[in-house]
Image (cartoon, rainbow over all chains, first blue to last red; front, top):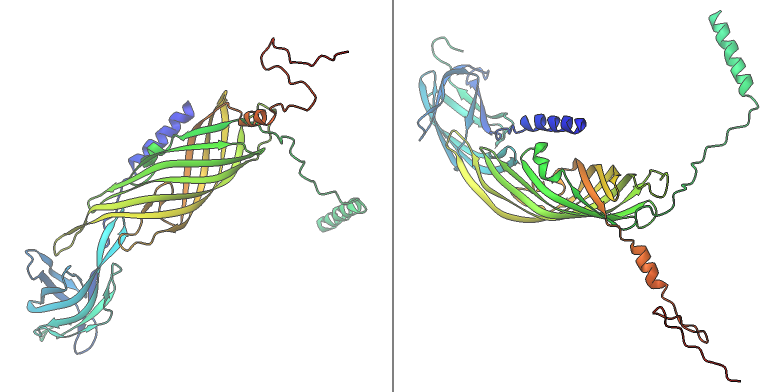
Length: 152
Length: 262
């Protein structure tokens, strides 16, 4: 009887701390900021707003690498401010639904098709890996013009 | 000095062992309990199945019944059948998987009986299990900066089968009443390949991964019906022999005999 109660106690403790479910993975597009002249990484104060969204994704954050969520639709539009110089970037992509597990759920992966952008601060964008997955890695290289005074 | 003494001891040991006949390899004695100890069929109910959610992620519950009999001495063919449900409800997924399953297999008893009434067994065995199951995702949500996406997957039916190896004990606690536990290692043989989502839960097996470990605790009742005796009795129905009188079926009625006339 004592052993049974002990087993019951262990099972109760185990059951009390088991129901922890992870959140689904998130695939984010990763871009590396590079100086268009020196081709070296550059840090920039970045603000990011998704066109059609009310909230900012990034707000005046100094970054060398930028992580961007893509939309479920085939195009994703961003307004990106690089040290107060604003550019628009449009990503054309394919969206693929993925299954992580029933405990975590579903998520999207993306395949980049092409990128359209304005060239106020951006010099050019190069796709290095078109597959945007939950394991964040460099997908694009963003070559931006260096600031005329100071900066990198 | 120490090396010298070690060498001496080694030489002594070698001298003692030299010339000794090689000991015969011990042979395992043959079992003396080659008799049927458990007459009749034993029916069981797994007491752990309704409470599986205590140690499984998600809300898992079910019921399982079993039947076994000692068909040959120490060999117990087994049939198990049950119903298993798995429900997972998180902020992102609302899932239900369920179905009935069956297993067939055989157990071998290693425990030698102390006497003819000793029915306790320590066994190892194997099972082949199969199920017809269904699953559905009532809703799922993919959260994003661009707003959440909500969807669902309707009913998916699938067949799965697997193999199990197990060890356990069954002990007689009262006359014809048994209790026992089993540890099972389960390996998936195959499950129907579906697009999205793949089969997550296999009733009777667990999560649809390659290997699962399970523990069961059951209570049993041995129906004290000796089917061998019944079959034996049917076989030994008296047959009339030519020229010999048939025995009377009812008491008091004498078999007819021809009187010899002189």
